[in-house]
Each structure stands twice: as C-alpha cells, then as structure tokens.
Image: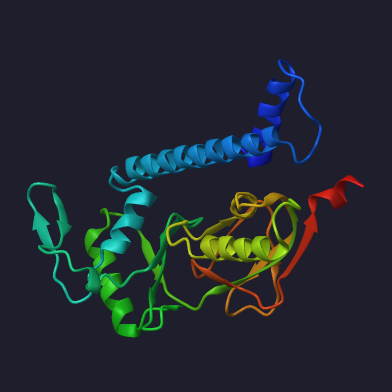
Length: 268
C-alpha cells in the first residue's frame, strides 16, 4: 500500500540527517525539495497500487463461475438484445456491443448462507442518479442471469432503493494546506468512494479511511462512527470492519459529521 507523503518525508529526512547537517528552519529550501520528491514517490506508489489492483481484478474475472466473473457478466447485460452462443469462447453473449443498452451501472454478487448467489443491481436515470431497475428491466435481467448461470446454481436478483450510510469523521490535516482546499478534497474523496460501482456491495471501514487519508493535505483520519440502514429500516446498524449493503449501493445521510483539525493541534 502506498505510504503517505508525511511517512515518505520522514524517511527521506531521517536518511539525510545521517549524512548532512541540515537547517532546522521550517522554511528552509531543503524541506521544499524533500516535499516535492516525497509527493512524486507517493504518486508513483499510488500508481503501483492501482496497477496491482487492476491486475488482480482481471485475473479474477478470467475464471468462469467466480463472483468477480458473475459481476462482470452483470455489466455486460444489454437490454433488448438476444443472447447467442459463441462457439469460440463456449459461452453465451451478444453478437454486437451496444454500450447504450448496458443499463447495469451498479452490481454486487454475494453468496448467502444457504448457498444462493444474490445479485444486487441498479441502473442510472437521465439525471445520472443511481436508481432501481424498472419491472421490465428487472424481469429481463433476471432471465439473463438464468441463461448464463452455471447449472445447479440457485440465484436471487434484488434491485431496490439505496442504503443510507452515516459517519462521524475527524480529519487531521497539514497546516501548509488551506482548510477550504482540504475540505473540498475530502468531499471529493468521499464522493469517489461512494461512486465505486464494482466494490461488491460491501462497505469496508478501512477502505473508507484510506480514501480520506490518501487525499492531498490530509495527514491521518479517525472514523469515529460508521453505520448503515436499508431503505426499509428505521434505525441504523453499526458497522465494524465491514458490512454488506442490502441494495448493493448507498447514499450518505444528511446528518454526517466531519471535523477538521490542524496537525499542530494534536502535538500541543
């Protein structure tokens, strides 16, 4: 996993101090160079993490019958098209690819306790909002799953309104970054975390923290509370390490809390 900019800066500074007598001034030129190099290394390590993750996903998708394979097939569903058998690949598919007909924008595939493979899916309306499938869309998608699934596999398809995620978060940021910049960056990071369309319908506590701490200007973060509820529930359920979402996707509650604390405040 990519190290934070601060961790890289500490590593570089420690090695420099063993060989050179450095100025202790916070405005010294060498600190600016260390920050620039640390930022470049951080971005490179992020790229390596992304490459590794994409490689692992591609490897998982290539094995037929896995949950990742089923998830990929969900996104390949084309409304209004008939399936045909491909003699080269030995699987059902479409003669042509029509992106406009691929209506599945969110898909999670999770096995239940009784062995049933549960598909949770949603589409997108004209305004870009994630919404449940219509009755016609749901019926056609269910027939599609019945056609492509392996023999003997029990399946269930769910398409409903988004779950709600509520959090209490403290963000510790570097005073060298403005509060407005950090606030905006964290908001974008949380939106990006919510917008992940292929996370499997599971919210992982540590991944949410990672999304925030990898934001420029953020040193660390504390997720004080995290809970969720389905559209049909009245009360929230606390989330420990992770939680499976009933709908397979979520929106944030309107009463989420974020506190921003300069790093210097933690050292007083």
